[in-house]
Amino acid sequence: MLERKVIYGRERPVCPRCGYVVYYNPKLVVVCLLVQDGQVCLVRRGMGPGKGHWGMPGGYVDMGEIVEEAAAREMREETGLETRARRLLGLVSEEGRTDILAVYEMEVVGGSIRPGSEVMDAAFFPLDALPSLAFPRDEKLIARYAERGP
Image (cartoon, rainbow, N blue to C red; front, side, top):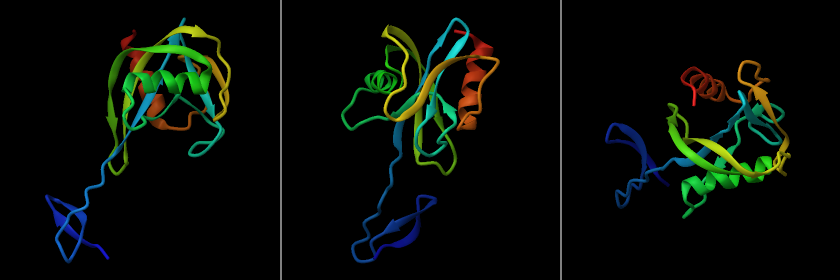
């Protein structure tokens, strides 16, 4: 059974017999921001957290996957759109959360919008008339983008 000890300023699990320290590492998530003609692409989440609410397309990066390719994969899986990452808008982390978000501005290179198997719907919304969003961070990211522009 592991014990909890303060190591390097944080409480961490430690093996009492050998002293091995267990370091839990965060998961990387891509979040995709696609804006066309003043409208942002959102998906209505089909599973928790936030089931039934709208959010920016995205998901976990698979082990060994190129991050920009993960963003394009998530867009294709959730919206049917073929996209490519235009630029990294930033990295986002929140106190106590286990995920780090890589937020990418995306551009469409093909396909047509349709909901994927993990979402209930996919649609474009005016930047100033967003539906109920699953995560407050999405509203902040969209607002920050709208203030700065492309």
